[in-house]
Amino acid sequence: MKRFYKTVTVEPAGDDWRVLLDGRGIKTAGGRAQVVPTQPLAEALAAEWQGQGEEIDTARFPFRDLADFAIDAVATNRAQVIGELLPYAETDTLCYRADPDEALYKRQIDVWEPLLAGVEARLGVQFARVSGILHKPQPAETLARLRQELEAQSGFALAALKMLSSLAASLTIALEAVRPGANAEALWKAAELETDWQVELWGEDWEAAERRAARFEAFTLAMRMAELSLKA
Image (cartoon, rainbow, N blue to C red; front, top):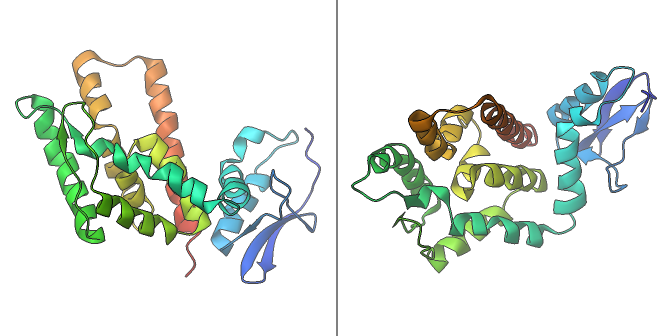
């Protein structure tokens, strides 16, 4: 599609913000007004439009896609999105460890345990740790508290959490990732610990490395989305 606009600006929309193309507000993929909670997020969306060439490349709108999901999917059905997030806690990567006599177990303890214990302390919950692959249910009280934590999140944070949880296979990593000042590299290292272990043992081809790089880019994008959507 040819570029159909010349100017890209942002303006307040009540307590929120929106992007204008030649003075006209943008619609989401679902046809709703694309209104976002902060000026920095609106400016990030505007930069995507401004950065397009003569031909519009729809792959270069990652912030727009996440914003549209927050507006079209999360805002209209928060309960469903929260219900889709909770299973990432029930099978959280950080809770499933190798057997204690395996070398991998020590690395999991070193990297995962401080992170998981920190989430437990912050939220006042207790996670069940599992050695091996057999499923062990998480305490009902823990899942109830996590539901409360998710219900307190904004729609834009929930959109980010949906992407982060999927990429990390961990709700605990995702919840840490949307906190202000979170360390993307450290959290991604935790999410990819077992993959890194396998790479050290067997190596990695360039296609797998490219896929991992793309996944890390998506992970940091979702973290940035959550950060930009925070009101001062």
